[in-house]
Each structure stands twice: as structure tokens, then as C-alpha cells.
Length: 215
Image (cartoon, rainbow, N blue to C red; front, top):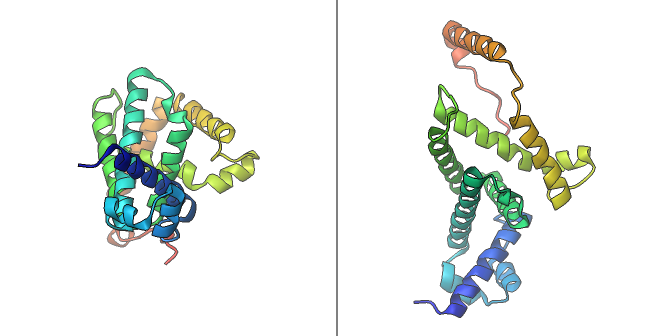
């Protein structure tokens, strides 16, 4: 069983890894750099996590768990705990992990979508395709963080820092607080989408959106 000091060291290593992984990406943060930032030896880091991949797994699990708790508290009490600087750092880490493009990042997004589906089932919201609803909503929310540089440039302040972050989140709350389409417009659009889907030819059904991959 780990001692209290070991648990404190483990948390310091994890927190240092989250910060460096966010700043440099998974490939750019070395075991030595993380250990140095945490004030421990590389050997102690390996003792706790085994490898950088093991450390990343622990960081992913911790960040996802913390964000899920924050979202649950907000849903239950509407307390704006998600605006705390600690939560901002975790959100930025999760986005960086997704940008890494690894199977682990993809699996993490899939897990987030499953959480979203379960949340959707507890609400009064209507969705003909709950999985697509949860997936697109998650992608839209992540998009704010993926476009941090572009948003910061047009807003004139860094949305990765508290004042800019609050401004960005406030705008998103105002967007979600009011419908952008009337019920009639939404209904007509959905009918047109159904009509379009039914009328597609074989060639049209095989069309694929061009990849945005850097590969």
C-alpha cells in the first residue's frame, strides 16, 4: 500500500504531466521533463505509472472523471463550477489529447459521447438520433477549445485565460439559452433532410467529405 507521501507524489506527477501534455503534446513531453516539473525522480514516476503511456492513461481517467463530476454538479445545482481555473486546465488537456489523434484519444471521445447519451436520457430534450445528438454536441463544445488561437485573435484576448474564457463561455450560454430556429423552420428543415436522404443515388451516397487530416 502506498504511503501518504507516495500519494502526494503521484498527484504531483499527474498534475505536472497534465500541464506539460497540454503545453507540448504527448510526444513533446518527456518522462524526465515531467519528473523534473513534479520534483521527483524519473524512477519514482515509473514506479507509480510504469511508462509515459501509463501516465497518460491515468491523466485521461482523472481528467474525464473530474469533468464528469463538474458537469453533474452543474446539472444538479447550476453552480458554475466548470468555470474554475482547474476545470479550464482539464478541458484544455482533454482537447489536446483528442488533437493527438491516437486511439486513446478517440476512445476518450467515444466515452464522452456515451456519457452524453445517458445525460440526454434524463432530460426532456427530444432527439431522433440520441447518439448523433450527443456526439455533435460534444464536438461543438470541443470546437471552442480547438479554435482557441482563432477565437483569441478575433476577440482580442486569450480565451485560455480566465477573462477571455468567461467571455467565451458566456457567449455559448447565450447561444444555448435561445433557439436560433423557430419550431416551423426546424420542422421544415428536418423534412427536407429526410427528403434529401431518400432521394440520394448510389454515387451520391458514396460521396465522402474531404479529410482534414495532416497525414
